[in-house]
Image 1 (cartoon, rainbow over the protein chains, first blue to last red):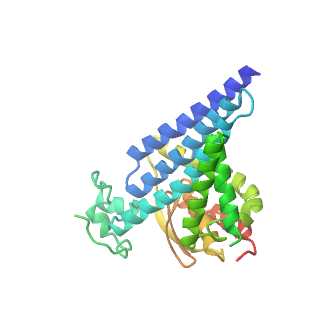
Image 2 (cartoon, each protein chain N blue to C red):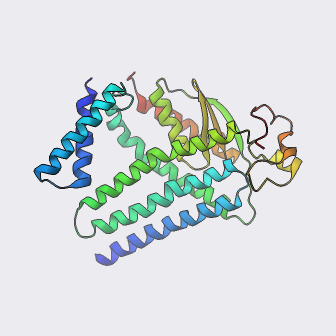
Image 3 (tube, each protein chain N blue to C red):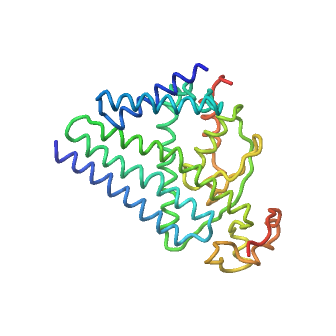
Length: 138
Length: 159
């Protein structure tokens, strides 16, 4: 019995760690602030979720107890608040004038600005992408 | 104002779960804290069915597991994008109309979209949703429509 629980705990913790690492990798590899938000969302949802689920199972190991309930509460609060934070970041980026990265824009203009995460100048002038106002942030 | 006792009960249950001390002193602190919190919330006039959707709890019992499963599936899809040797993203911002009737329903729908990786709600004006998707398939498919219908059903007939 104890062995099965250990295996379940390990599987949950390791798959949680997998999503945490993959999400972090996505923060580096993806081209702009908006696509990176999706990677951050992975960390918030499955990374934290599977890790907390693993801890939950571990704490239930020696009978029902409060730790499991508190861990579920942690996850509930996290899942309620993180979309609002993500939304705030997206909203701030858009009203700051960041043009979302698009394939067409990248073909027109090459690299993304690494420092600001903004799409390149040429991409901003790509046809059809110019309707969002806000202007240049610099 | 039938929501105020609910709010108080939920807050006090939370207090008990988090403290788990049953000495008179701590119970007294809990009662005072919850009462002050409910009082402040009532003064702000935010205690209503929108901030405390107790009427949705039963239907949420089927919605939440479905949402968790959707979150898992889209996590796997986004992980595949990130881990592929060459990043192939095709992000776009899509506008579409949501069919929820209340602000609460729209709030739940918007947060559900943002919670599933691959799609983020960037703005809502009326029932017009503006959603950023990491690849076209995340938004073009039927998934969001299914979610739209599910949230509309969750919201039900309550105004």
